[in-house]
Image (cartoon, rainbow, N blue to C red; front, side, top):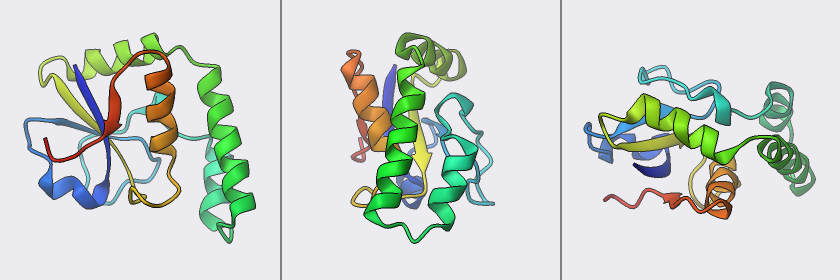
Length: 126
């Protein structure tokens, strides 16, 4: 299974043959493909980040909380859950609102997956 990450801003460029799942709690209203709950950030930390000044200190707090959540998870189990949802498409893109050059937790999740040997990276139009 091929797993990529992207922002909702790229959604119109992602082929419909790819399974699309949000990893943010509040995707755009026009998005109806589903939310992948295991990779959602902690609700309290997500709200704090969203309504903060989004300073470096705020980002460090959010990033630490998200990394801590991932540490408590099993990457193989998460990948298996993705497979069960996407087995017919064979390709999935996990979406969040942040652009690739902004602070974003999907990058943290991709690094976490790669640490366990899974080839997960930003979607590059392929």
